[in-house]
Length: 224
Image (cartoon, rainbow, N blue to C red; front, top):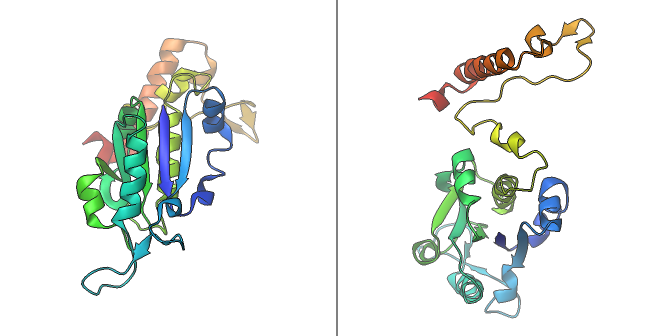
């Protein structure tokens, strides 16, 4: 998989991809993540990629021409399954969407910034708009990192124990059951006896019951 990320502040994305599972996936050759500076495609020598909006509204708007330039160039080099725009009014990002995106071969993520992007970009270039929550961030770099991280960890081989990803919260619309580790008794706080019994059927039944109970209590909307 190749993920191309377009940003006006690419330095914000250096750290998220330089560590942990994403870095290991890159080192294994399972994914290639390329961050592009939109300012390199500016029509002005100053590197400016924004201008005042028509109609007299407040704020600055990302211009269509530099975005057209970079997306057209990237598309001339390879096919992209999705061209994603990070936006607070996009479709809410969830585990199901991450699963779907993980099956793509290549995708572009355009990070929003300023007051927004010239709407013609959304009309003519973007295939999917994604929001990571009902709040507004300074830019789309953090959402792009979230999307990339959630997708990359689902690529076979990214995680040593692939079953671990399959048992994550939200994979089956349930939250994860509680997990424990050694010691079994710490300050009188004990691990549930069923997890120590060695009976795998009982343990799996307990996990299913706990996952359902936690979901009903904490995220009942997932069961609707």
